[in-house]
Length: 93
Image 1 (cartoon, rainbow, N blue to C red):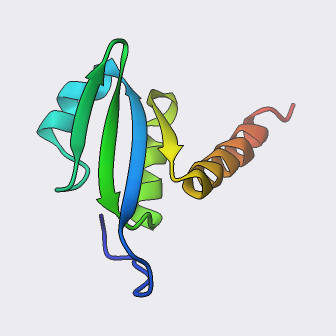
Image 2: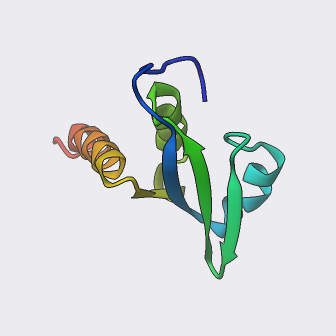
């Protein structure tokens, strides 16, 4: 996804959980050619094989509460940190 890439990094498995309402969108507009969708009840899993980068982070953050990063754990923690920082800006009175 996008053009930002560290040339020393290798593609890895990125696993995302989405609310089922996003399924039609992600079927018609895949995030990446490696995308694989696994249906499961009220949510579904989307698997990608790529290098997590700025563009992927931006897309994931754009889905807001409709997505959860499951793997890799360091990428999950990075997204969690960004969401926590954003949330703190809105919780100031």
